[in-house]
Length: 207
Image 1 (cartoon, helix red, strand yellow):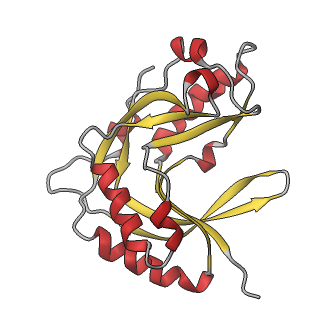
Image 2: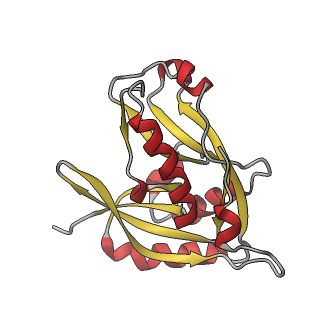
């Protein structure tokens, strides 16, 4: 029987953004009044575009080729980050997230292109959940907790995400350990002519 791989497509976070966000989350977790949450590890932070579920490893080359064809012509850009929010809502939160701005819809279009290109190979994508640009920071240990008061007095670091590559990841699950993510291949998005995409600009944060 062929082993299946649990995979997803995402935009990775740069070291600068992960560092800024990790420092903030560390402070939150050290607060004795912090809510009872299961915090995710910084090594696993990413912006998911499409969750593929279990796939045949032999399909990986075809998935990458479909992504390359679909994303050809998409330029790199910076997306503002910083908003905090919850799913499904602050009064019965199950997920605490760090938001990535998408006022012009470019991230949504990128996610749609990725999902559409892979749907013939991964039929479950045709009925996937709507795209929301976010990074999952924590999950509630209960069915849903009230984070309204906590959100009112906390803010994430204001920074930006360099959307310059799309990666096909494999999720490696271990009993009692946080999941690890292995890159199976990436599609680079070229920087627009004259654009400044350096890490120093991204490292500038507040909050």
